Structures are given as C-alpha cells and as structure tokens.
Length: 57
View (tube, rainbow, N blue to C red):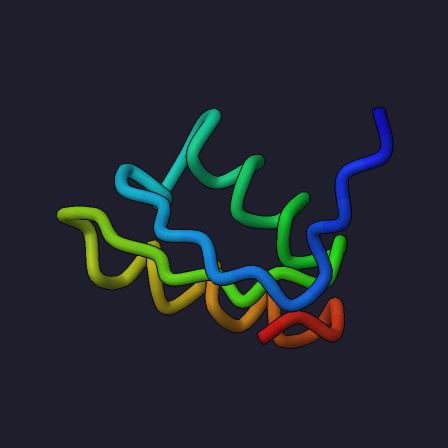
C-alpha cells in the first residue's frame, strides 16, 4: 500500500525522546507538517531545530 504523507499535518505527543522523537523526525522527512508536544520544552526546541535542519516544517 502506497500512502501519501506529504502535506499532512501530524500531532505527536511525547515527542521529546524515544519513539515520539523518532516518529516526528521520520514523518517530517516524509513531507508532513509535524506539531510536537511534550513536558520538556528544552528537548522540544532541540527537536524542532533538528527537524528544520532536515528540511521539515
């Protein structure tokens, strides 16, 4: 099955580490707009920078 992800908006909670972080990065590189949330603001800021550097939004 070929699922088109580009342009979709995805909300990920628990995105500061582990599976949430890996999922956010993967989906961002697949063209999704990723909304990330977690309790650790510093880790979220770092993740947002990583995603932006990879060309994600």
